[in-house]
Length: 423
Image (cartoon, rainbow, N blue to C red; front, side, top):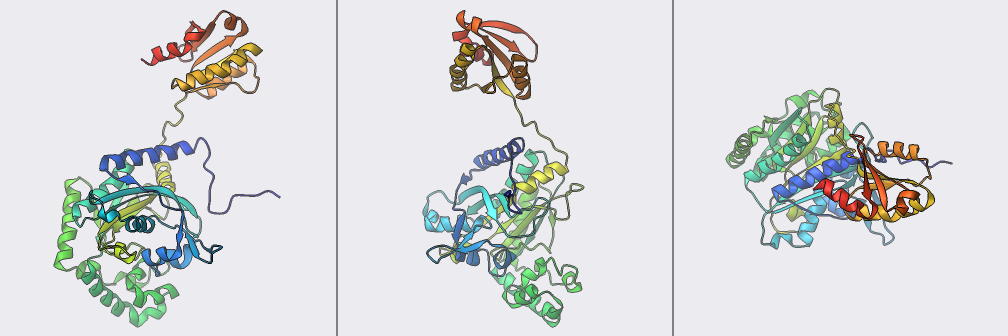
């Protein structure tokens, strides 16, 4: 019986993985420019972290987590997102006491959610995210958004739409919460069981329901924008002002509700407008989460961040028809004729590699014509041909595969020859 890959997962093979590496490299380079430092947290955590940090009314906690009991009887969950783990590390390692505030972090790695697999959405997926902890300045909200936008743009994406909203401070949210309860309560029986359960716990989450999105009460639900107090309005106004200063176009969408319980003030999503991208257009989501650090046991600390899926990033690149030159070729392919020459190329290959050159040789005992075909497949810029006679005379023939020019080089000077070409 053959063993197949689990549903909702994927193998990323050579020829594909290079694009992943390109995106990951660009993300790291941008984070370095923005002064965000990498953090790596465990792939599994205590379940309570996500119940408290993500929110027990969310679909993630209620339906999508991979949770199991370990041999010690502890409830363990494969991480479904990166913010809660990052904040847990921030609290546990007392990073709030570091001299350099705010603490600006990024992470990249696999996350796990049990949901229906579809295009660009997997049960094991890779997230890149950033978190800025310790600042209430709306300018850092704009900075976080600009980092995400610049990452997409620098990889060539142009059909992007940024939507933003304010969920307000605690006072604004409480006032809005009561208005939502009064709005939905008389007809809550017409909604799904999830919405009914959320009415008293977190009515804002009803607005994020996919099943009842077309219900008439959704269209007339009280908007959070109408319930913002003066402080929240001023904060949201500053975020918009800074985005304008950064030449970042945006739309205000009062219906934008992030799916995690810890958000307040700024919330945002970046979407793809590319034709054929699919029904689910969101590429990236994030927002401010003042209160999350306290929920996980730390001191009062404001925070803001975002997360994006690499899989959906790649899907957006394909939807816009963006192709990247992935295979850069190799510097040299060593072709050998004769047993002594083949033996010698083992050490010669090592010399080239240690000198900083990408190089390869034949391992299948192929004829010289087949070795040249292998060099073509690898896009070798040069092929160095060594026969037994050349070996005796300390010579090797080097062919430029672009021009066809061929020169004879002293064998023990081959590395120096290539170094001269690069100078």
